Image (cartoon, rainbow, N blue to C red; front, side, top):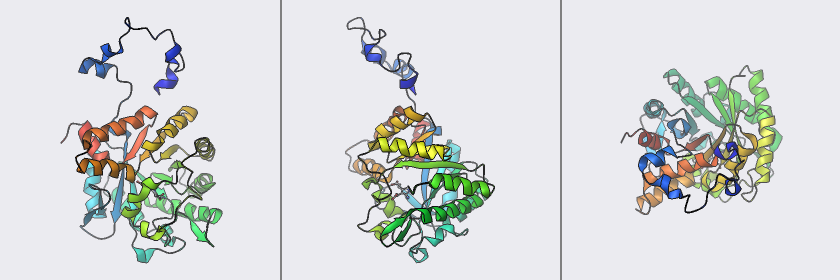
Length: 348
Ligand code: PBG
C-alpha cells in the first residue's frame, strides 16, 4: 500500500520532497492521458473482483431482485453459463447465496446442515461443470431460520456457543460439497477458531477461511435481505446484539486481531464505501489479505440513481471500485463484478 511504503512514512506534507509553488506545479503531471496513466497510484484489475450471486431452486428460471435492478436470482442450470463467463473474464471467485424456500426454514436453521441443501447442490454443480474459479460460501444461519437471524434464538437471545457448533457443522457440510473458501458472516464470538478446528478434524486443512471480521449492523443490507427472502422473517428486528455498532473503529481492530489469531486466512470489512476508513486501518495495522463488501444497498443506490439519470452508472461504478483499492482493499465483493470486468477489458 502506497502510504506505508513511502520513505518518509507517509508524512509527505512535511518532507523535503514536497516543493513550493511556482517551482512545483502538481497540475503538470495531470495534463495528458499518458502522464496521468504513468503517475496513477492505484489500479483496479479484474483479479480484484469477487462476484456475489443468488441461486434459487427450480429449473430454467431467473428473476430480477426488485430492489437491485440488474441483479438476478437464477436456478443452478442458468447460473452455470454466467459463472463460465465470469471465469473467462478473469474474475477469480464467486460467493454463492441461496434463496431458501420458506417451508424449509425453522427456528434453528436445520436446513443449513443438510448436505443436499441448495448451496451444497450449487457448489457440486459448479465443480462438476469443471469451472476453476474459487467458490466462497457464507457461514451463517439467516438463509435458513424462520426468524431471519444469523444464529439460534432462545428466549429472545441469539445464543452464541450453541450457534457456533451449528456453524461448524454447516462449514463442514459446505467443504464436503467442494467449497474452496468458508466465509463466516454471522459475527458469533469464537467461531473462526471453532470452524478451523472442525474443518481440520474433517481433513479440510486446505479449505480457506475468509472472516467477515468487521461486520457492522447496517441498514445497507436491506436489498440483500429482500433478495434471499430473509427480510420478511426479520421484520422490524435488527442484528445489533451480534453485528458491530457503526460508530466503532477500535473494536474492528480487536475483531480482526482475534480472528487472525484464531486462524482466519483473509479478512473482510462490511459494508464497504461508508466504511473505507476501517478498510484502511485494518490493512495498515495487519497487512493481511483484506477484502471489502460493496453491499446490496450500495449497489442499489448507484443503480437506482443511474436509472433516474442522476449519475453515470459506469463511471460511478468504476470510481467506487477504485476507491476501495485506494483505501487498501486487496479485493472487492461487488454485484457489479461482471459489468466492471467487461468494462476493464473493453468488452461492451
Ligand atoms: C448474512 C449476510 C448478509 C449479507 C451477506 N451475508 C446480510 C445480513 O447480515 O443481514 C449482506 C450482503 C449485502 O447486503 O449485499 N449473514
